[in-house]
Image (cartoon, rainbow, N blue to C red; front, side, top):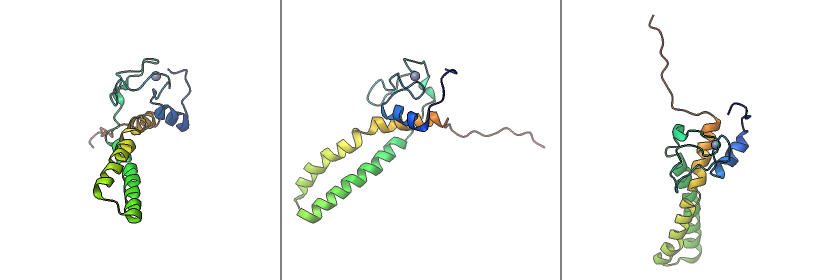
Length: 129
Ligand SMILES: [Zn+2]
């Protein structure tokens, strides 16, 4: 789509958070929970370039870990509940803070990868002297 202007970083991020195509912002990115469609149904962008790797999981682990550990420490210091109550309290919080934002975080990183044209590094062929 050469006639379409490049989106700003904010527009790309919003497309990512909405789990939409990073180029047109209309087509859906996912075919399953975390499985990507082969290409955009709206503009035809091939999603084969996408390689988010472990990035989304790392961000989610760091953010969710800080939230859950802080909550567990506060509750332990203030109330000293039995351990079973900790399990009852923090297991749902762990699931909520990891699974709910995972799709949006993955598509956000995909949108930023597309926006910044990020790709694996390549060696440059140089003529031997
Ligand atoms: Zn598209």
